[in-house]
Image (cartoon, rainbow, N blue to C red; front, side, top):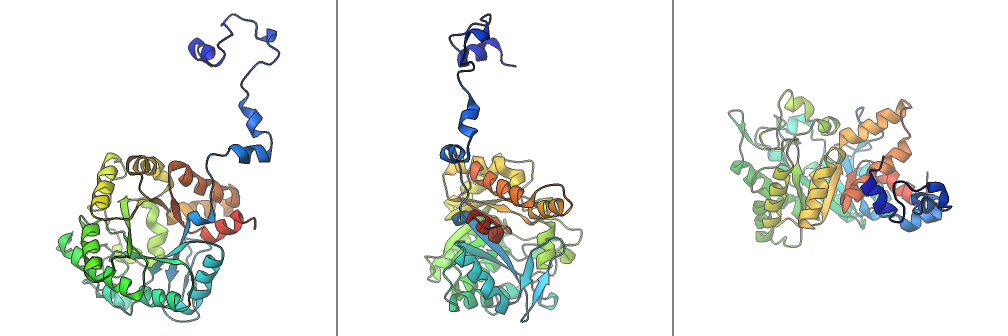
Amino acid sequence: MLGSAAHNRYHPRMSDHTNQSQYAGYPNIRMRRNRQTDWARRLVREHSLRTDDLIWPIFIAPGSNTTESIPSMPGVFRYSLDLLIPKVREASDLGIPAVALFPATPPELKTDDCAEAFNPQNLVCQAVRAIKDAGIDIGIICDVALDPYSSHGQDGLVENGQVLNDQTLTALCKQAVVQAEAGCDIIAPSDMMDGRVGAIRQALDSNGFTQVQIMAYAAKYASAFYGPFRDAVGSSANLSTGDKKTYQMDPANTNEALREVALDVQEGADMVMVKPGMPYLDVLQRVKDEFSMPTFAYQVSGEYAMIKFAAANGALDEHKCMLESLLAFKRAGADGILTYFAIEAAKAIQGEK
């Protein structure tokens, strides 16, 4: 109930003791007037979701004519290179600006030194070249981290049980350069090693890739929402009971996120990202307000899976919750969203069901 001060602020001509029935138009301010019709709601809408806001993460599988389902991510698949191309073309035709590529590296290629990460013929590099050779007009984002290639599931090199920071930077730079050589447009370091953005920027520039952009996973949290993703890239078994708390952020911290972003911006990041998404909308808004940088959010695998499984069990409307969740990122300040719903959302935005 409004207190007297608030009451008089909104109704300055009316005292606490005035009979409200004397005023035929009471209340003078009716918020519902702007909500009565669809056209009025559209006219005053503060935020909107566009196809231009979407980035589609795609998983790549070895072999040919292969589509592999991911049980923990209903509706998401791993595609062999030959089937990947029509999927990327579909995304481009829908107006989605970029795709992000993630490999399911065969177990026999996962090693302690993560050498497959900087093999010019690895799955990601092959996929980048195939998309470019197909002439598809779409941006290609490549993840830079060692977990898809490591025998231990960690994002960096490991010695005596410790994830090594500076030695990992050397490996990440090699990985970024081979991806740029393959034709990658945006390098996206997701490893959370200290100093990696500056090191990668220097490596790219010194190898002639001054125009390749960096989208830094600037505030990436040690989250429990990544489980289905690790299933998708096959790193769950490698990581086993381990965790990434010594380098990914503590979910309790927000001020620390601003420090992380500030460092990545200083080191040359062109864009920054907050990951996960919906549990960290407060962080997303603080980052956007503080830096006014191109800022992205990742609606991660666990967020996607929650909506999918809840809808499959009749708990909610998948279509409406998908769009509402994506709009929440825009409202919090995101310039774009990495989401496994990208194809469905693009069709919905264009009026298809």
